[in-house]
Image 1 (cartoon, rainbow, N blue to C red):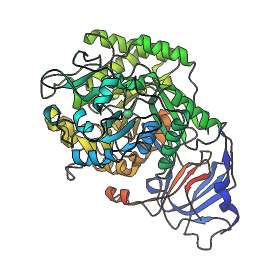
Image 2 (image 1 turned 135 degrees about the vertical axis):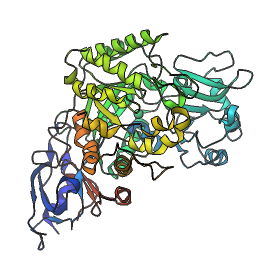
Image 3 (image 1 turned 90 degrees about the vertical axis):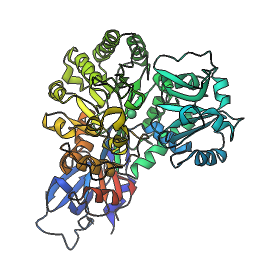
Image 4 (image 1 turned 180 degrees about the horizontal axis):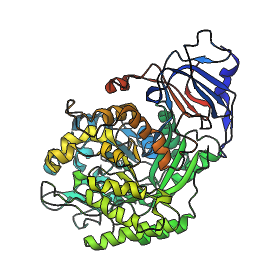
Length: 567
Ligand SMILES: [Zn+2]
């Protein structure tokens, strides 16, 4: 093969102008987008022709690539993926494989401090690892046994808690005299002494004393994430929540300087994926409307991604609530301990917090920002929809619900009417729903994320990984969304399944719609950006769990082969 196969050597800049040679693919399967074989012709980064083939092309046209019936899908848009933190998790100490405290200690023992002198790790599973702290939780003493002399802070897989060693607790000034801050808490022993395990927004106290990352380390996190995501067929993502509010989240390194790192990479042409970055002010717990207003005013106006561009910064994340496991998602029907949670924004009563959320939404929308609200509990979703409904022209900015797990089905029509997307995470449900039945009741826990009901109500449904909370594996997301099965209950099923077409749409064009980009990316059609994922075989949508067995052969963005090869 010759000539046109040099296409991978093309270049792009952030004005969206792609220069690459023409590329023609023949004998292409389009999965749920159409029966039979197709030809796709690409020119200057844009899809030029898509047409069905009357029969398999046998003698390959000059320069065309014969895909021999393999499936090509629109490039995957993982529309809620913490790419910066995913990259940090890849370059920092990876604790995902630790099954026991012993495993965790082994990994920690061999870990070295980073350039800042700290050891930061990610991905341990609090549901699996038993420590020697209160109630069998992992505590500072567990880490001290291995690393007493270096600051160690290890974020768990959910990003909603972390454990520090005694040195970190000392550096952060956390003692028995330290009160639980708004939006977070410390696990304490019987004398009231914090054990080292820190929940939700209380990680702020550690992150405030942790050294920031260098610009090189920030760019490395993004580029490491990008390389990994490209190998999986992901061509676009929304990175939800960088800015001052990051101090209350995960390892706390994703400040505004990380947003600058995205800008630098876009300017230098090193950003190949199409990235939307959401800003975060205030953060996890206790955010005030004043925090958000001042933050946005200091940042300047939103900058939407240009058509065919690489970077957009026009969205704002608000943590309206937390997660069921810490009983911080606001629900009508109580948890197993009779509590119902509440909004996690500032305020001391429900009505104060509802008003604070409404202020935030109103101010941000008035300044032209699109808002994605972390809302898992049904009452949170309703309070957020009330706030959105009170803005002027609510449909224009396409505000959206992040997660939406426990949304009341009656609210779906209102979401559709307000143009509010539901951005849900089927692979999180697959992994955790069976473990939360005591907390939420079986029906509510397993029935979460009513995807089919949302689609039939006319809601734009986008599905995403929320990596690094789960692996950014869209193949598992599709199988989970199409079957509704559960990791611990593979035979479970219900009436909220998506079809293959709906699932792929939710990972492509619906994500593009959330990003105001559905007119130029997210589908294989003439005039659309040539963002494609080429698989190594034909995907069998009748057997959804066979899809995770299939591999990505190449990832194409704007006509450029960014991963793999086609020759
Ligand atoms: Zn998230």
